[in-house]
Length: 404
Image (cartoon, rainbow, N blue to C red; front, side, top):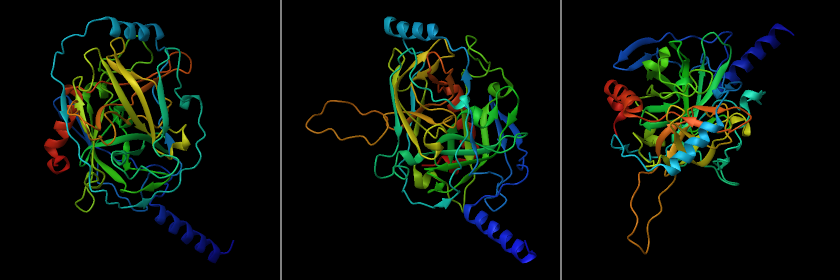
């Protein structure tokens, strides 16, 4: 190849990289965060990230983050919880459920193309969590219908795909997340940090409404990520009935503050979900109907937003996590579990019924179970001591991110 041809080829590659909005470096740039603590919350604040051609995220070849797996998840304990839930009189709540409202947004787009994902070559760790021996019914399907697209329609567009790097490992990884304030995202703690290792992931990106490489509402970097210190240092209360430690825990929940772009934040356009905690949305016996949103790599190559609907229930034997049936897998971690999902219909011809909080996140995808057995998935409970503590810490330092 001549020098002129080599130069032309380099120019073409640079042009393509510029269009896609990323470049793959030989080693991912490790953003060294500044660590601070606010009560029980640890906050990692990162240098302002660039979305120029030096962006260290490989959007095309990013791999789904494996769903943490409870390797000896107990069917007998699950069944005992289910039977006990139905047979035991409901206990009086020890705290009053709290709901925080969301917003629809104006729907204005700011499209960026990140590159169509390459086909994933995945092993058993990405096996779909199909219905298992507890017969926990569910329905999983594309968020899109046979025609048309929902990724730019509220409430779907408040959910998105997440990209990040893990220091010491090659390549980029994928999780899911959703907006719960104008510039604040909720996801799983294991999508921003490593349990018990005091380690944060870097170069974190949130792409609301992602579809097949398209970022209709932009690509947003993390200003800071917040987790409970107990999760970060490994002292979080976790289920002792399953292995390994750190999978089924009380506080696998994280909050992320996004960097503004030109003074704007994504929720202005996408809107955001409400969130609720301390048993909000659950019946007195601990049951709830849920819609789960995410980007699992084993379904449609992780290119399309997926939706799963199932009844959930609280399992006292598993760190009071909520359990549901689902087909999702790696890459769906951190995706929201919502109550009353969709656009509320108007009551006609009757005055009965009561208004419920709609499009409200009460958990995020935290873990799955082994390929044999119950095959259920779980989410840490949303509590005043985790989700609200992190939101308070995020909003106290970033008031504009939380304004309606």
